Amino acid sequence: MTPEGIGGDPTMGRMSIDKQFHGDLEATSKGEMIASRSAVKGSAGYVALERVTGSLQGKAGSFVLQHTGTMTRGAPELSVAVVPDSGTGELSGLAGRMTIGKDGSQHSYTFDYTLTEAV
Image 1 (cartoon, rainbow, N blue to C red):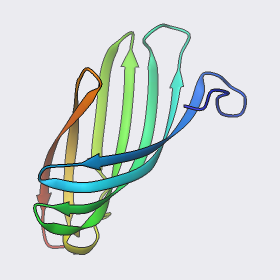
Image 2 (image 1 turned 90 degrees about the vertical axis):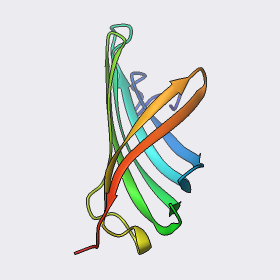
Image 3 (image 1 turned 90 degrees about the horizontal axis):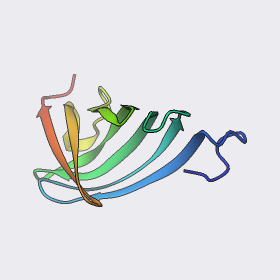
Image 4 (image 1 turned 180 degrees about the vertical axis):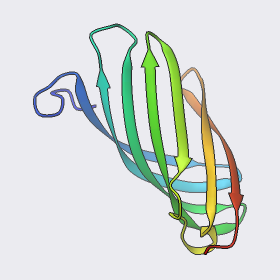
């Protein structure tokens, strides 16, 4: 997050996303996240959009993930979903949700999806 916050507000921040995925999803992503923390320790929220470009089980294209996350006094709640109709190329018609796991500083992703013929 930017150290000075958004608009001079230290409780609001913005961060760029730059990821690599390996496995069934071989891709890179770029995006933006906006976050806010409260005065209560462990309470915060964020939203983000990221475009993922690469291949999913050998099918090439891109799609957009939408993140919505909150933490209430340390208890996390997270939703990461494919933006409807955002798939391109062979990933047109992609729908699904992603869960993010964390082990120390390493993140892992589980992607539950369907790929149907686009309308």
